[in-house]
Length: 232
Image (cartoon, rainbow, N blue to C red; front, side, top):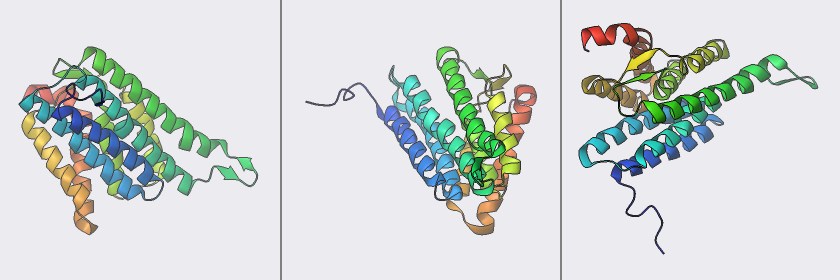
């Protein structure tokens, strides 16, 4: 008896499912090496872009949008949230003496949980309302995860930086701020910088991480206002 998905899912769906697998790998890696986890998250972001390219080339299936959002929950919701939680736990112990410290508990558990919840809401709304248009409301989960991963790889793997950044990104994911889809040439540039940040080490790796963080924050802050006007 063959699996139910045979004949129903296409090549683009296979790429999407691999994105979900990378999300799990990133989550596991976060408990061991946050730098490795950040690289896997960026690799998942590249895969997320590739499934759209494949879908445009060879076609998609009705299950595609749903699989995409489900995969994104793993890669760009759970994985970056666990990354932040692991950084907080390493620097701010949850237990002080025999008592649980409420500050680290909120920062290391409550805030990452809220990030996942906002990502789920954002992806559900996107699947319901934005899949067929060239713009979306709220910061994309892929962008939020990319910002967090690039921040870690750039050397800012400190709760003082990551905790407020996670809070801001969680809120921005469910705002009504409109973000246009990246044009193909800009997505290509972002993907190449992401790939370079994944495979490079030492000063080169940190340099590409800085470049990626600059591009991601530039889009995050300026795209709702300038991207339309300049047609970049």
